[in-house]
Structure formats: C-alpha cells, structure tokens
Image (cartoon, rainbow, N blue to C red; front, side, top):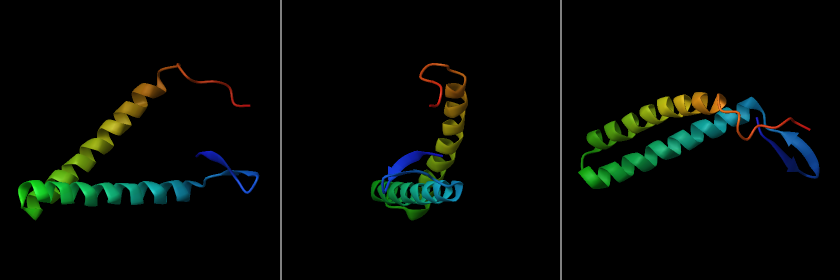
Length: 80
C-alpha cells in the first residue's frame, strides 16, 4: 500500500483500490497491445493472442523480478 498526502492528511491506499488500479491498468495494456498488434498483423485473433501472451509473460516475469529485488538490501531504510 502506498501512502500519500491528501487534503493535508496522511492517507493510505486500501488494498481494494490497489487491486482496482491494477485491473484497470492491465485492461488498458491489453486493449493497447491488441490494437497495436492488429494494426501490425491485420488479424484480430493473432492480435489478441499476442496481447494475451504478452500480459501473461509480463505477469510471470514481474513476479520473478519482484522476488529477486526482495532479496537485494540496497535502497531499504527504517520507516519513520
């Protein structure tokens, strides 16, 4: 969860909001990638396949990337 200043108070983003943002971001990416792939191939089935495979592989590699970075101590500091 991220913390931000809103209305001069410290607010914390809820898990539900974070999930909603992740879903809308992923949908935006899928639509964008489908359109780009469609313009490149002219085939909506191929375009959807490219977009979906990109989303799945991106999801998997993001998790791997996060787990690797979780083991690296650089950049961590005590919360105040």
